[in-house]
Length: 351
Ligand code: NAD
Image (cartoon, rainbow, N blue to C red; front, side, top):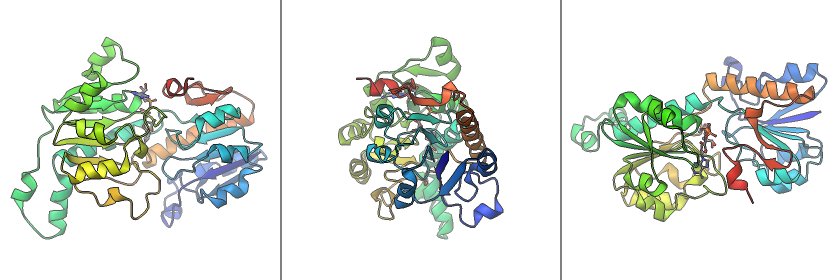
C-alpha cells in the first residue's frame, strides 16, 4: 500500500521539537509503523504538482485542514487505487465528499481530536476583540500610552449576548467555557440539544435569523458544506447588530471574502477574528490581512502540540485498522459505502 501524507513544512522547529508531529518532517510519527508493516509512506509539503505525481498509485491520502490538499473530483478520478482519504484533524471539506462517495472512497477524520484546542482559541479571540487587546498590545510595541484610544473601544464580556452557530463538539465547549463569564448564550444548530444538555451548558435555542441579528458576539462552529458555503454574504453580515463581533474558526469559505472586507471597512462590525481562510495558505495579498479591526491568526487553533498528538494517534489507529482489514472507528467516518454518513455533514448532501 502507498500512503501519501500532505503536511505543513515544520522548518527548523521540526528537528528541535519532535512533538511537532503534524509536519512533513515528522510525518505524524507514522513512518516506523507503516514501514514495519511493509507499506510505503510518502510525506510531502507540496499539495499541488508534488501530490499529483503520487496520485496514480496512492491507496491512502492523509491531509490536514491547516495546510490543505484540495482533493477534487478530477484528482479522485486520477487515483484509481484510492480507497481512503484521511483528515489529520477535524473538518474534511478539503475533500470533495460527493465525489469520494461516488467513487466509493472512504473519508474519515479524527473526530474530537482538537475541539478543546479550538474552543480555547475562540474564547481567547472573543476576549481579544471585546477587550481591544490587539490595539492595546500594539500601543505597547509602538512606545505609546494612549488610554483613551484603547478604552474607547474596550468592553466587558459580562452580560453580553453570545451566539453560537453549530452546537457540536466545539460549540458546546465554547458555551461551557463562557459560562463563568456571566453571559447570555443562545445557539442555533440543525439538531437541537436536549433540555438537560441546554441546562448544563447554560445555552438557549434560537432561530437562525434571530440569533444572527441579536448576538453581540457570534461564533461560527459548523462545518463547511454546500449549505454553509458563503452563508455569511453581504446581506447576512449587514443583518448582524451594528458593533457586533464575529469569530469564525470553522472555515473561511463560510464567510464571503469581499463582503466581509466591505462590512469591516464600513464599521458595521466592531471586530472579526478566527483562524480560517480561503484559500490556505492565505496569499500575502489576501484582503482579510489588512482589513480594519481584525484579530486573526493563521490556521493554528486546532494544532497545538497536544492536539497534534491526539490527531496523530487517531491517524495511526485508522491506518492500523485499515491495513488489518478491520473497520475504522465509527465516530471517525464521514463517507462510507458510497454515502456521506456523518450526521454533521449528511443532511447537507442528501439528494
Ligand atoms: P461537530 O460535528 O461536533 O459539530 C458541528 C455541528 O454543526 C453539528 O452539531 C451539526 O449539527 C451542526 N451543523 C452542520 N451543518 C449545519 C447547518 N447548516 N446549520 C446549523 N448547524 C449545522 O464538529 P466540531 O468538532 O464542533 O467542528 C465544527 C467545525 O469546526 C468543523 O467542521 C471544522 O470545519 C471546524 N474546525 C476547525 C478547526 C480549526 O483548527 N480551526 C479545528 C476543528 C474543527
